[in-house]
Image 1 (tube, rainbow, N blue to C red):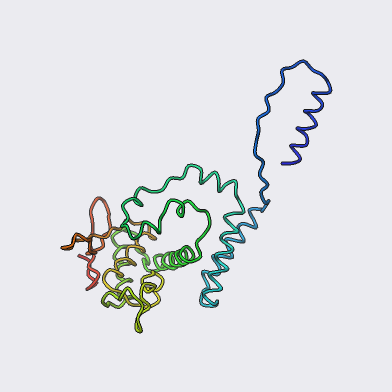
Image 2 (cartoon, one colour):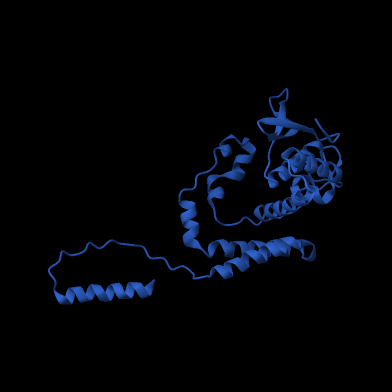
Length: 249
């Protein structure tokens, strides 16, 4: 960048010295930013290093591993500030964020959604969980090709892998981790899940397999929505699955 600017300056001085009679060129002010020159190869290694750690979490201390992944991902995304700025220039939040319950809107503000900085508390765990779910979906569907067969295979894996139990308490207690237990990765590691949690994992597996899933619900007496049955959408039809007894409807 500075090499080109130097040639421009020399050319400009040469024109002034030559005393040509052409109209002066209008000078347009520009803000010049110094950006680090990091090759695509180095960026690729940063991303690869983060994914490698996530693939081998059992060999690391969890807290140290999360910090390493967080550091490498932030280095990776900020190694291309020009591309990041271009990608973010026309970004708009999804309209679904407007219909979130009031208690959750603070977690999804436009400022947080637009930020290019990874959150160490939530983003890294979410990426970890999605990595696990992607691997599970790839393995659990087996040789199934038809969308319905894939959905049934993923549902069968969910039921066989997560023993049914009642909804755990939201608050931490002697026999429960409380809210943290509701993370997808924690549900997978525990090998247990309520009907709603089984449904959640099943829907996540559908998404990883490229299928559209929805959670049907009912309305309680107080007007709140209660989870009922998960369904996969195929060919304009909704195919329901009963998560408590583990039966396709």
